[in-house]
Length: 204
Figure 1: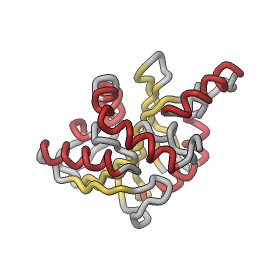
Figure 2: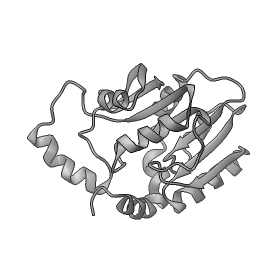
Figure 3: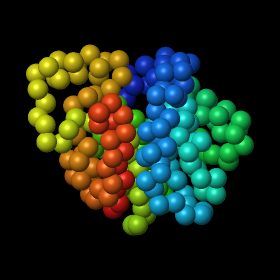
Figure 4: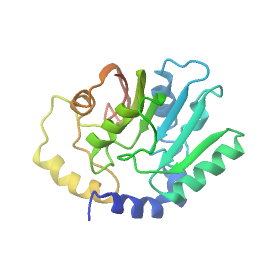
């Protein structure tokens, strides 16, 4: 049952009431840094994938068209409430990041924060991001990654058995994942915990 879409939906439904308490302050600066890497323009159409309770919303420009998705209805409910409280016009939808219900080349920017290390199949999530991005679109990623040049040791694999059950995979490498999906990485910046968390900006 570990690391499946059904398990993610179940555990993040349970986490939803406490998610803001656990994640808001910790990831405030990393979110701002990651979104600050994007070359924003007025009128852009932006998709937040696996956006949870919408904690990225305060760091987005107002003059854009914003779409927000998450696998879990409980998260979407809180994201919608956050958007309404901030008087942001945001379309919030329950959706699997591995099967986005949007047309090809529909978005100028796709934001994937703290989702690639959680998805059962991050390659499929990136393939969907690639599909829905315009030819000159930008992919904004912020997540925890194992160093690209470092093989996964026995200790890390053992710890990963536990972390994958409660929250996240700690053995995934950013550069191979993103490049194998067809993207070119333009910016890569450590943002938390001595580089365990990185903010990357990529283009098609």
